[in-house]
Image (cartoon, rainbow, N blue to C red; front, side, top):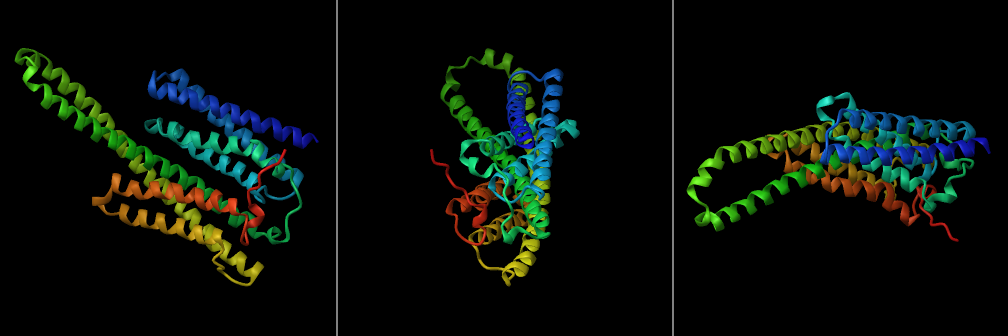
Length: 318
C-alpha cells in the first residue's frame, strides 16, 4: 500500500513538473529568453528525471523484477529515457532550444501512462513464464532506449523540415509581393530602407541556418545512438527467442515492425553520410521513421496478437 501510494505521488509530480517545463520552454523560445526561466526549466527537467527514477525504483522493489513487463511499465521507462535525452541540451549551452522540441515527448508518454487507459496494468503482477529470464533487462531496456533516442532524433528532423519549408514559403510569398508592388514603391523610400532590410533579413537567415544545422547535426548523432541500441535490442531478442521458442526469428508482428524500423533508420544513416543528402533529404526519411516507431512500439500492441501479446493494449471498461 505504501509503495503504491508513493508510486502514485511520484507519477503525478513528474507529469505536473514536465508540463510546467514545457510551458517555460515555449515562453523562452517564443517570447523572452530569460536566464531565470532557463534555470527553472533546467531544474524542472532534473526534478522530472528524479521523480521518474524514483517511480521505477519503487516499482522494482515491490515487484521484485525490472519494471519492463507490460505496456504501462515500458511507457514509464520510455519517459525516463526521454527525460535523459532532454537533459542533454542543458549540458551543451549552445543547443538549449532543442529541449523545447524533445520535452513534449516526455509529457505525452508520461500522460498516457498515467491515464485511465492503462489502469489495469498499473498493479504489478507475477511475470509470465516467457518473461522470467535474465534477457528481460538486456532486450527490453535496449529496445526502449533505442525507441527513445530514435523518437527524439526524428522529432528534430521533423522540426528541421518545418523550419526549412516555412523559410521556402516565406521567400516565395515575399517574391510575389515584391513583384506585385514593385511599381508602387517609391525609389527614395526603398533606398533609405534597403540597408536596414538587408541587415535584418541577413540576421534572421543566419540564425535560421544555424538552427537548421544544429537540428541536422544532433538529429544525426541521436539517431546514430538510438540505432545502436535498437540493433543490440534486436540481436539480444533473437537470442532470447531461440532460448524461449526454439527459433531466432518468427516474423511475429512486433519482430517484423522492429525490422522495418531498423531498415528505415539504416537507410537514413546511409544516405546521411552523403553530403548531397544532408539536411531536408535525410530528414524526410527520419520523419518517416518517427511514424514507423510508433507503429512498432504502440500500434502493434493494439492488435494484441503474436508472441508479444503479453504487452498488448487493452481498454478499461466502466
